[in-house]
Length: 476
Ligand SMILES: *Cc1c(COP(=O)(O)O)cnc(C)c1O
Image (cartoon, rainbow, N blue to C red; front, top):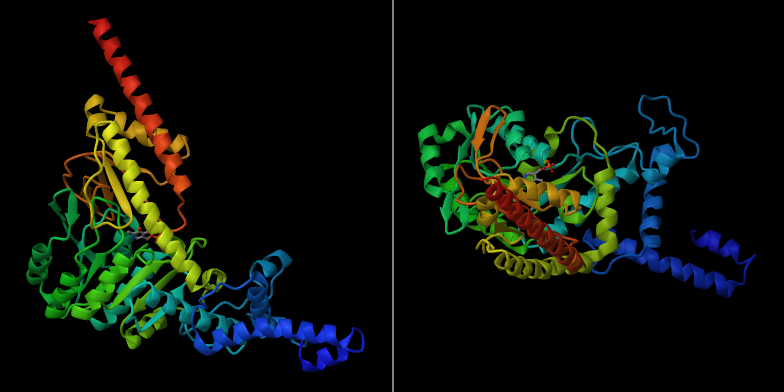
C-alpha cells in the first residue's frame, strides 16, 4: 500500500492502528531499500514475508502481470497452470535477451532487476567467502559442466588455433565431458603421489605446454574441490605457469565456495598469476535444487564476453532460488553454515579415524583436502575379492548416500579416453578406499549415523568372510 491508500484506510480503521501498520510495512521496505542501494547480501536473514513482498513487487513490474496488457507477440509470458505461475512467483519472462544473458528485457523490468540483484548478491558472497578481489560474476541456468563448456567456447574466439586443454586428472565425468563437448582435446596430466595424497604434477604440466606449443593450448583447466586422496590442484603455481606462457586458466571450483581453503587458493592464484574464470555449482554450495552455476572472474570484460556467448534467453529459476536462499540465510547465516561444516569435517575425520583403526584400516593422510576424506580398505580387499564392491552396495541399501567405495583396477572410457584406475584419479593408487565428505548442510547426526552403519557393514562383511573361509576349510 502507498501513502494514499493508507490515508483512505483511516476512514475504515482507527488511524493509530493504520499508522502502526504503515510503519510495519516501512520496516520491510527499509530492508528492500538497503538491498537495492548496496547490492549486497544482508548480514541478517530476512523473514519470508519480506522476501515474498520483494518478489511480488518484482512480479508486478513484468508485462505478463500488467492489468491492461494485451499481448500479440510470440512470447507473452503466458502460463496455463496457476500452480506453475505460483511456483515461479509469477516471474515468467526469464532472464536475458536473445543476444546476452545479462541484458535487460524491456518486457520484464522485474525479472531483469531480479537478475541484476542476484548477480550482485552472489558476487558479495564470493568475496566474503574468500575471493576478495573477484570483479564480476553471473548465474547461469546450467550445471557446472555445461558452464565450463561455455567458458571454453568463449576462449576459442580469443585463441582460434588452440585445440588442446591441459587438465590435471580428476575422475569426474562432467568436467571431462565439458572439454569434449566444447570440441577440444583434453590432455590428461597424471597426478603425483606424495604420501597418501595425489597432487598436481607441475613439471608434467609445463612439459605438456612446451611440447604442444603454448599457442595450441586453449587453457589449463584445474580443479579445487575433489574426492580425497586427490587434493586441490596447486593453483598458485599453475596460475604462475599460465601467466608465464600466456595461457588462459579456468578453474573448476564445483563445491569449493563452501571451503575457505579452496577460495583462498583462487584468491592467491589470481594475485600471483593468472586465473581467467572460476566456475561453481549452485546446488553444491548453496543448498538449492540442481540447475545453476556461477561463472566468475577477475576481469569484468572477459566475464561479460562469456555472458554474451550464451545464445538466447534463459530460465530465471536458479537465480530466483539462490536469491531467496541468500536473503533468507543472510550473510551471517551462510557464514554460520560454513563454520558448522568445518567443525563437522573435523568430527567426521575423528570418527573415521577411530572406526578405521578398530577395523585394522587407516584414515588416509590428506591434509590438503578440506572437504573429502578417505579410509583405506586394504584388509577388506585381502579378505575377499568382491568384498570392497560389496561394501559399496551394502552402504547403498542401508541408505548411506554419498559414501563412495573405490576399488582398485577399474577401467572406464569417457569420450574416447580410457582411464585406468578410474574413480581414484590415478593409474595405480596403492589401495582401495572409501570416501566420505563434509559438505555444507551436514550435521553431526549425519556423521554419527553413517559411522554406525559403516561399522555394522564392516562387521557383517568380516563375519561373512570368516564363515566362508571356514566353509572352504571344511570342504578340503
Ligand atoms: C559436481 C562436479 C562437477 C560438475 O557436475 P555438474 O553436474 O555439471 O554440476 C564437475 N567437477 C566436479 C569435481 C564436481 O564435483
